[in-house]
Image (cartoon, rainbow, N blue to C red):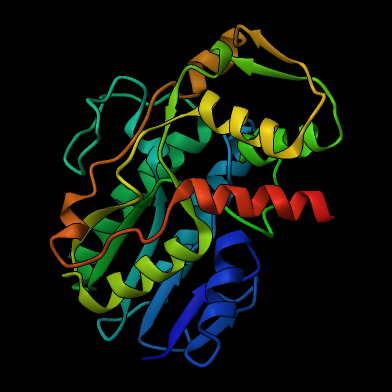
Length: 274
């Protein structure tokens, strides 16, 4: 199996190609057509703080151009996000759970991308899978305040800079090491039936404050941790608590291996060395 990887220079896409170099074909940014019968599509914005125009162009415009080149000989594997569930979804979130509205531009356009893929692929008889990923962390991510706040705050504590936690860190997330995500995606393309949606995560809920305190101890950081209230804009576009139900992929023998805490310590130690 050869896999054409769209978005091969991004955080997860590049790591996927590094892990499976013999079967992946990185597709150039300006190319819309696939080089193989299996497509893995990572191209996306990454947070809810862009102008709407950017999210529409990247998440929908580029996607539509790629879809228009497909034929029935390909399988389209699309990387979606847990952000599409919204803030008031029942937890742990199953693939069938959906809220009526999501408010962030990233969240809205990712949900619309799913709708576009399902409608287009059904009409054209193109097999597809949609993978909704939990929070992914690991080396190589270009983290920021808006994207991968966990690693951003770890880096701040490494330099003994004071940090601020929304809600005092008293909220839940579902975290997965990047290598585990790549492995589960590979297994998913081999085992999972087409024309369906799959959550890909740990299925565990991690209190954000616990992860921060662990990093603080391991780093022996002098950073002061302060509790702050999120801005009104943040409350509108972000989700407070989230973790996934991953029983659907577990039925096919696909599940996270290893400990998130041990993998987090690897990130912390890596930050200490750099």
